[in-house]
Length: 284
Image 1 (cartoon, rainbow, N blue to C red):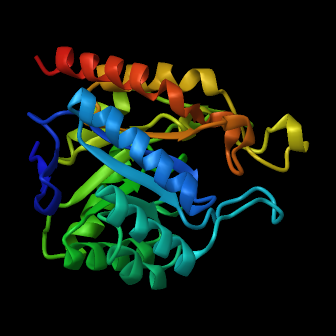
Image 2 (cartoon, one colour):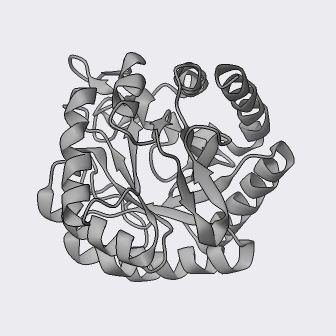
């Protein structure tokens, strides 16, 4: 499998390279929290010798309720992400939901992410692919909860056809719908997606979601099993994942979005150290 390299950050993912860490906040709450989280995770990854990308969403468009917190929006959100990038000196990952967001996001984010629900939206994927490729970044596409791993080949094909065969796509596993209000991760799917010739990450945070099943809001928001994040992350790395996608918060129970699936920030070092060790064993 060809590895990918982001020259401007000396960042690589794939066979022969360290485990890539894409981690941060579920959603931007304010600049101070984004800066503090990015600095903490950058320091942890530097100590462990792991490549790091800060992640936060400027808009959580896929919400269970119209009343759910969505973030500061495109303009203010990108301003905050650009400031984090400038002050902390880290690459940035964030997700988009509409084709018109692709160009401004690709100008700031080094990794442009397609949400799982939208991975088959051709206009979005093609526009994001062209904008990201023109900006020299990577496209991180989450496999939909409704797709078999091998069906992700159509995502890869769309991106390559839109960019004259360019290779800058990373696929992300985040579980499949399994009955009502539940997701399950088939670890064999990681190997299946790697057969498509692209690096594969695990979104262990969203894989533990219980869609529409947060008892705190009577089903008006998504629940989660925080204790399962580490289990899924470790299993995925042991199954060959090239990177991990994780969301943290200093006080997860007070997070403004998806708190039940969020990890405490002070536990990042122990988990990432374990994942690094597993990755080393798997890769010989």
